[in-house]
Structure formats: C-alpha cells, structure tokens
Length: 262
Image (cartoon, rainbow, N blue to C red; front, side, top):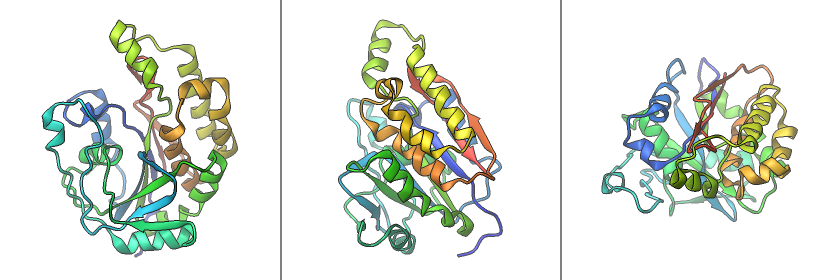
C-alpha cells in the first residue's frame, strides 16, 4: 500500500456505551473527528477493552461486533458494526511487533471501545479495521516501546486509533452520578492537565510515568483505559501538531478529551 499523505493519529475518550445511541456532546464530537482527515485505507484500533495477558491482533475477514457491557438498553445490543477486517494488515503488524511476541486471533472482534467511536466517525463501516490487544503484563514504558514500531503504518494510509479515557475511575464517577455531584475533583483535572502538557511536549517518558503518581493512581485504579493513549502518542512524532477536542469531563471525573496528532 502507498498513500500520498501521512495519516494522523487519533486518541478518543470513548466514555459510556450510551454515547452510541444518544445525540449528545460526546457523540457529536466523535462524528466530527474524521472531518479534515485523509480517508484511511485501514484502521488499527487499540481499545482499552481488550486487556489480556498477551499481544494479539484480530485476523478475521469479518470481525464480529462484541457487546462487552451489561445493564444497558436492548437497542445497544442490537447494533452491528460490520466493518471488514484486513488479514494482511494484521500479519504485517504482527511482523512489526515481532512474531515471537505477537499473535493472530480469530476469537475476538471489535469491542465497544472501537465500534462505539467508529460508528460515528465512519458510519458506513466501509474502512477495514484490525484491533490490537493490550498486554496486561507489561509496564507503561514497555507499551510505549512496543507502540513506537507501529509509526511506519501512517505512511501507508493506516489510521492508528487509541480508545480509552485519560481519567477513568468508575467508582468515583458512579458515586457522583448517584449523588448528583458532577463537580470535577482536583485530582482529575490536575491529572488531565498534566497529561495534556506531556502530549503537547511529545514527552513519552512523562506519559509513561504519570500513572504511577498519586493522581495517576486515583485516575486509573486499573490502567487499561490509559494505555491506548501511549500507543497513539508513540506513533506520533515531534513534527506533528497536537489538537485537543472535547476536552471536558463526564460524570464529574471522567475525562472525555480527544487528541489528534497530524
């Protein structure tokens, strides 16, 4: 494959699955993310919701839509995002990561961290999608190093999409939802601000270190929703301009910040 334009890199704060079916500020933000971007030949998606002991790629010609949530309206479970896969891309990415440490799997598909966003960005589901797992055994610096090997995909028309949230403490968010207190606590706003500054500075070392700070541990009781940001940031380079969209909080402490490097 070849492309006349280097593809941008995108990180999305995907938030609640309800954003798939609701017309709100978040879903409208997802819908505009593709505005002005070159049309990708394919998408490599890194979702917080494939957090397993190992590095894997979906190798399905037709990846299934995974409804990996519970307690939501039936309408959500009936949605199918029928984007094709791209087996050749999955094999190529495996080679870039190292065949001894990455595998191909057909027992996964596109989880809601991926399709809940792509359904708004590319509603026709006509761009091939391959999903990459997050190895829960690796430290942030190891994820960053692994992700840097993916940068050449941008020259070949592949959009690298990370999907998680810069802050993701669901216990705090649900408590605020029940109490009606949607004020953003200092630890959430401060962590979000520190991450944004590190992103703007193209400081991968700072991004890898931030989850171990006091605010970082509060923002991420589990690191799964932070790691996709590292994959996106590592695929960017210092010549990329950084643009933030939807830089606000849902349920008080859930950062919905999106980032585009181009």
